[in-house]
Figure (cartoon, rainbow, N blue to C red):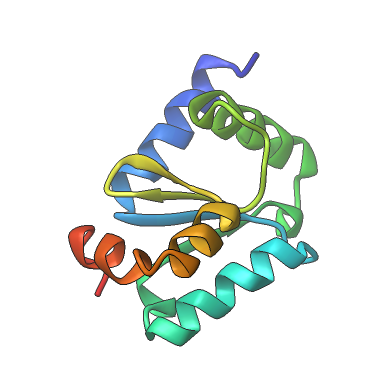
Length: 111
């Protein structure tokens, strides 16, 4: 269970950044998601937190635990739009295949 301090930190980050992605730089699923941001020209709008790049990996683990508790699942990438968990790369792939991704991004005012 995540500490109250790190739950607060995670919630602050979610609140501060309309488009937030929890990531790890080595993660292939995260790289797929980076490509989606690039393809839509929104890479600069999405705030990315790369947990494996933290100097203090204990802090990264505590923050990851908080995001896991908030999202209900331990997974990277985890994407938040406008204060709510949007999903993961699995959801992006599904919505792209279904032709829904543009509408979801427009509704969230990302594009």
